Length: 257
Image (cartoon, rainbow, N blue to C red; front, side, top):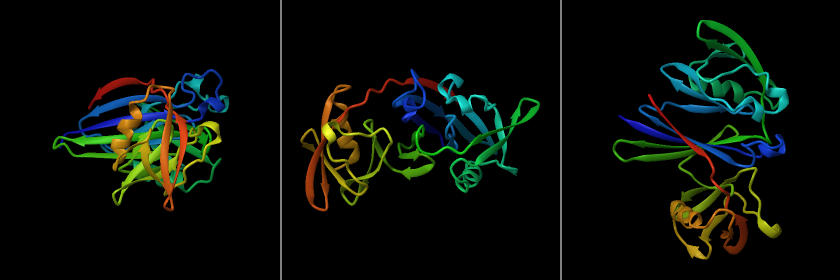
């Protein structure tokens, strides 16, 4: 079955680490894959995207070295490299790679065995959590019109979700729109109340809707940098807060398998 996967990458809070970075504060890059998309994961800290293709993990994208923290610029990983080992174990799938990395503590070494053409090399980096995390949003559409969305935030995978560019991850649940996560970039205006996981988003700019996609459509009608009013319900009590609609200034690349 033909599948098209829309991959949206957001480097969150890198501006705290990298002065004058073009990737600072929520930059997005959009990629579309035609054909069997396979599985995709992120190597946090260096912004490397690994894609599982025919039993191999291929580096699909790397952040430019100038956009990385200085202590990570010597990590020797390039687009189209094949990662075949992680901490001494052979890896062929995203699940195998993620299982090894998820078992590590923050700051532990991730040692990668890499194939680059005929060459073999080893490169290493510390496991990175917290500031500088990447968020990966994916939407897969099959040729029958079916659609599935997910968000990977700091290695945590969340299925069938909707994202607002101010930094809220939403999910439809039991006829309501539930907040399931806030990204590190999220902040309110005028020290407003932040939503918690489990709170219900009921309106955007005083317009109510019953699905996450409908509320997102209302949110997206606002101009970039406009103040947007979000109304939530917590344990049956409503409250409102204001956020600034973030600008989506990414670029689009097309890749066919």
